[in-house]
Length: 276
Image (cartoon, rainbow, N blue to C red; front, side, top):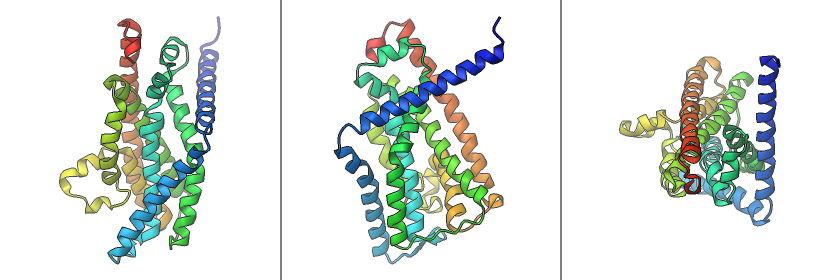
């Protein structure tokens, strides 16, 4: 009899292999056309420029206790990760359906969660040049860093990545069950860009909509990451937001796994694979 530890180890290794293979496939697909190397980095750069001009026209040089450019650079990081949540990891199964491979995916032994994670991992690698370019533009326009605790800054960055992946897990199942995930994604992205606190401090939003902001793990992650890298805040200051971010992220993962189970049921047991 094979020890259970060995079986679990094999399952983990298999899931990791699927994740890495999916990430490589995503990067290969994205780099097939040269225009992609211009399109994806250019979008966040233009958004940063627009936000910077709008705030500059109002005469603001400090936002949320940080330099204007620093506040907006970290906000762009959050907005890029949100887009990754929606259009890569969140849209993973939709991508497979659009390419006619969703049937093979559901019939294969590959973990659907590992596939979604692979899309998310691939998107992080794909957006690395974008993060670097936005950072350089921010520094050139006055962004200043003040990291007082490397632990707080590192945990804040980890919380943002975790929040992005968790939202992707939730959206992947919900999008495919809706059968029109692209329409939902297009509708939800603009308000989430505002409510996530990327361009406007959460404290400035109306109380009537802050409950939506508080329900987004990326919001809490950004509220921890931003002061950690811009104002020298330590774990004593950011700990609450970090805990909320990881806690809400865990809830999103659970919801996403339940949605994926429902997708499995519809696809395999009800014989409706062609609809998904």
